[in-house]
Image (cartoon, rainbow, N blue to C red; front, side, top):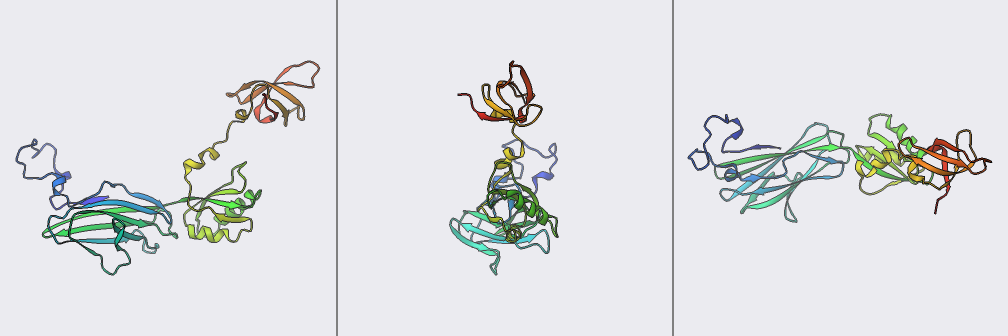
Amino acid sequence: MSKLMSGGLMDDMDPEEGFEEPGEESGLKSAGAEEMLASEDDTIKKVSAGSMAEWRLSVSPKAFPAVLSVSVSSGRDDAPEWEVMLYDGASEVWNSNHASDLVELSSSKTLVLKAECPGGGRYGDSVSIAVTLKASSYEESITFEAVAKQSILILKTQIDQEKSVADSLYAKANLGEKDIYAVLSPQGLRGYVFVEGMNTDRLLEKTKEIKKARKFIEGETSIDDISHYLTPASPVIRIAEGDIVELVNGPFKGEQARVQKVDPVKESVVIELIGAMVPIPVDVKAEWVRVIEKEE
């Protein structure tokens, strides 16, 4: 967020020149005393398609009547337009579809500025919103910015057709303009596929052509919500000492055994074969065993 003040730019001062201790006559008023426009939201907002960026704006004109003007510009000429709105409480006082960009003010107040990222936006599309307040001979401006980011959506599929749907979407991701960045079908999660993409309108259109795809779950998820699917769980988590297991790989495949020891570091287990004449401890990989009976 950039900020312009009629009282001068404090940042241009040499810290060792012209600096006076508090209480001395410096000829400069504090920034707080000068501001007619103020906002604590001083970062660039990153929002996904169809979502809102929001800023709170304190407006304190030095004289009345005062006029607030809003100017909207996008970072790319052929980008779909962001819808920008200005609210006074629950009432909308201006939006980017209005013919006039002026709002008259008769008192100080707190306003809320909102910008909706279009559903057809591309990664990195942006909007810049300049808000200017004029009151008598005073004028101040603040510029707010928002940037489009990708979404992670949950696609409902026919049960046991998750991989088929994921493969179909992956194939479409490599055709034409890339608007699908990743497709995840976690093992063990039935009936759902995660899709990371940018243009949500186009994602909806593409899934209509996939027979086993059902619909997107309303809203979106985050990388934090699905991170546990991205890191494979250690196979020893499901195994405990005393469990009865079946060997599904290795030289003893098909045999049953009892677990004697679990080694989480090596991801292995020590077992004793139940059918052996002489019980001999055998060290095998944890992924080679399937628990068939838990130790009570």
